[in-house]
Length: 301
Image: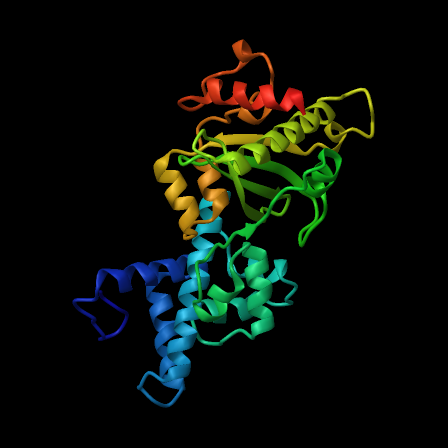
């Protein structure tokens, strides 16, 4: 890599060059400018050894860059330090820029705000514990109206815009709540949409089918201004293949990035509870036969 003046740096590792390019893009500088900035900060400290503090700041920097890259992938835009600073209530973008390059370490409170903005696991961002994107275990309330109120209730974010039901390749059901500010909350549930469930799981699915049926009725009721439809909240469902299911469960990727990759919205949540088997699509192998069995017991209840 050639620099201004007489300095030449040879044989830099590819990952170092890639990281310099990432930082330069985020900070809106040339790569040469980014290197000059880093060298200036480095020499100003008065020593050339890597301290424990510097190592920790570097790890925080790497995690923050990773979250910004994934947010950019979802938004298809170029998220800058100033954007992040404004979103978490700071007066200057330069503060976040210093966090990104590893010059200054954010406080735990600031890291919590960053994790909240990126819908990331705060323990991972602060300490490297767990995975970048965690999930909350949830069993949906059994009474239909109580369940619907739970689905639409305000949580740590406002302005709910989308509810997404996901059936992964093993039959497990996830729930994602998506908000206007491109934040999300992900739940993993005990429900399994598959004939491998035991009697307890089967009874749980009967109750969930009843909830989906009532949710559909309220969601599609257009004449009443108090109906769910008037809230402009979208309800969708997807079928994840084995690769997306694995990526989603591992928690390394922003769930919204995985949702964005889906080519089609499979409306199975609107159909599986219907008693008329002829109107049900074969969304997954054995779907029609198994759902018909669940619905037969649902009618009895």
